Image (tube, rainbow, N blue to C red; front, side):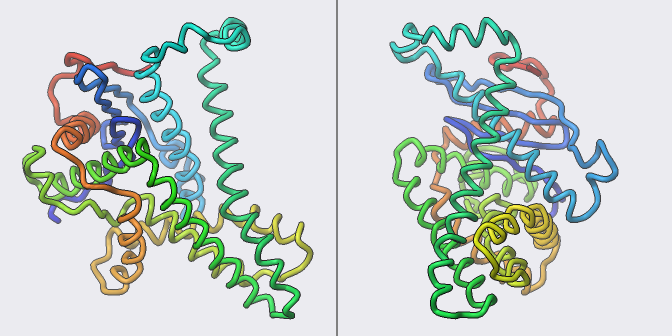
Length: 316
């Protein structure tokens, strides 16, 4: 790859969000076949505050920032399909009251609530439940290292099973197709080829900077970090997992950064499991989906000269 870039993004409902050098662009294929593009300038938190740019710290900050942006763009893509169901006229009195009381702040409240729920769900399913499950093995009089290893294996199994099961849902399957389109488009851009669906389709849908790699490595790094903790009471273990999560995510972020720059065989070995896991989180996209991803990348990188083309929204 000849072009050095950190552009990346995520799949959303019938579209792709790309974060590039110029800002964040979300392109969505609407029901009428048009591509709606929303763009907003964005400065990473790590560039707003020197403390947030410190290694390890920047990893956890980037994780929270990615969650916020992810939820925001998912809500935006979903909003483009509101009103297509007959149920829109049946809006509850409570929802109308909330919108009346909070006004423009209702979206911020929804996003904040979604972030809290997402974090609670992730911590519960992937950290607390494995700790409870591993506790059952404590009766075997195993040492703390063995119990922590068992906990880590349970965590990985739950993670893979979760991805596999949601991938069976038809709506999620389409999101995974757009995920593949995102990766292929980024590869095409990194290789300095003209951004067309035909060119992008030639590339792999497995990308080393994918969030799937990050999440899988979080599971592996947590096994190592947690192995240094003692197997005391269950509440203490759960608290230690939550408190150590910033360190785990921060270290994982640094590993991902190193993997993205290194061409060594060791980095390829580290990346391989995550790349294989992308077989579950990506699907082969069609040309229409690649066109959407290309639209998002071009806008995020400022490649399109027109700043207000038809069907595009800027800012909020």
